[in-house]
Length: 290
Ligand SMILES: [Zn+2]
Image 1 (cartoon, rainbow, N blue to C red):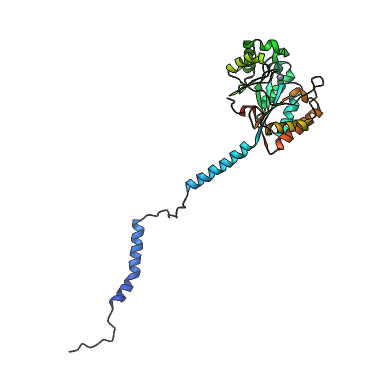
Image 2 (cartoon, rainbow, N blue to C red):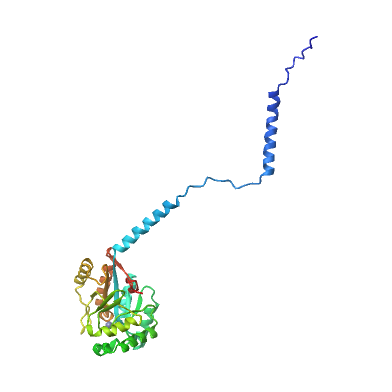
């Protein structure tokens, strides 16, 4: 006997599967929420090539160094202060904001209240540097001064103690002498023993490559500034300085007491500062200074 058909289609297995599908999803999601606490999404990590970055940095540093090496170094040094010209020199140096080294005569610091005030102004300035140019400046009796090596050492040590310089750079009074690293030069042979003694006592002794001359009677600086600047250029070009690429310029504070002289100094400082081939540097940065 044949079973009568109800007319309803037989439920199919696929239909029940589709009915259960949303439930299955909910269960999966709920269980996922239960089992896994929130985690910080993981973003794709950028690929950092540290070797390439290091290489780039090295190239940048090398090129900076080449620019710095290519620039010729000029060391502006001013001798014999504090005296009547020192404040003008300090003013010009400050206006241009350039490094300069002042070689101080110890006795001059204590000669008058005004000179002592000038010394205080020098000490308070962070751009310049102060170095030892002896205590007595040999009282301008150079021959007898240099005939007494231990006296020369004592004279410099006296200034070092009284003024507490932050470096051990010394300049000999009345002599262009050098004792820095392998540079060993004395302009007047008879002074050698005293200068050697000072060097042995721990001082770097710096002379100069070019001097800005002045008239010893009127104290006016030599006005042929263009010629001096050309000499600086030629000397560096011909590598005739004590260290090629480095030039020490000597000037004297007392030459810059007048407004005209100050104006001339400004011109020289601006000209050196604005020359793209030059870099102005403190004496303590001279190669070999320890
Ligand atoms: Zn001097």
